[in-house]
Length: 413
Image 1 (cartoon, helix red, strand yellow):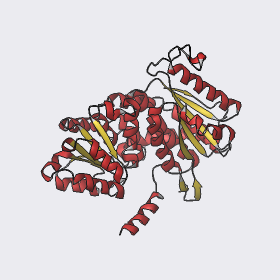
Image 2 (cartoon, rainbow, N blue to C red):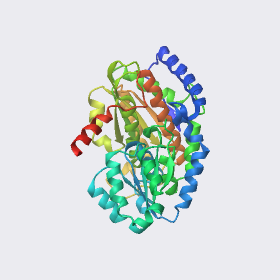
Image 3 (cartoon, rainbow, N blue to C red):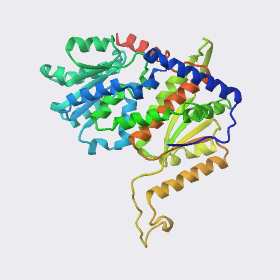
Image 4 (cartoon, rainbow, N blue to C red):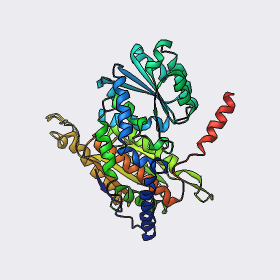
């Protein structure tokens, strides 16, 4: 992966020192292993997690379909990687099909049940607490579709040890995997949360983890996460309070949605780490190129100057050539590949942003491989941890999310 920084931004030496000092703290804190707030950074090198996941996937290899029950951090990462590597149409081409039940949408659940092989699906329930309303509702419905005698074999749970879900798994004899307690859901993609469904679907998780590991090798001021955090924060101080991830690949859209949760829950906070009421936050948005140049391009180029954009593009895509046709409408594109056309659109967009003095940076992935996606995702997770430190908020909690959950429980009771 290559990274082009926002050269229009001049970093504050104070901000740079603050981040470098914080990186030293992170390095030292990681010696505490999974007792550290930064535990998620240890996941890509944890061979025990990969071993446990591999053993269980092998045990369940006879099942043709997998239904993942989870919401937010419990499913967005796996979905993002699956679509990025296999394509959005992976259900049509993959032998092992993976479905995601992530909200109480009866039409969606009925559609899943109508498509999957009911007699041969495996159910995995992913939840740190095991008490999320939407996930529990889906679990109860889908579990009821499995005969009592088969449930022990056809259900897997992934949760915190000692959670309500792990207690249920022990009682019923379900196979279980665990999430390190200090690893939050939105940082958990390289734990069993992401690895189990991905390995089941045939994703090369070793390459995924190798990419994630490599993104952390230069844990200093040359690290892309360090530069990205400074880019976003420098522009945040200039009232650029919207961060758009502009992905020039249709198959990467769910990667944008994964990042949207990562930034939204980690940065949007009512209180600072010192307890001061700050209402801090940067609003994450997702755009897909070139499609969204025809929907929000006018807004981005001509609208309020309140955005910082991170472009993501691919260096190599599959070959598709536009045929030469004497009756064709646009002679200048005949004989060109789709890659050449997309590259021209991307370069034109970047030039337009420069002309309009709009701040941005640019990530270039070699291709949609496990290695590149792992490298990118780990980079963005570290970037958010560093950005939160600059803003002065805790990236690992989400207390305000409980507000809607409490009100929902009242209504349901």
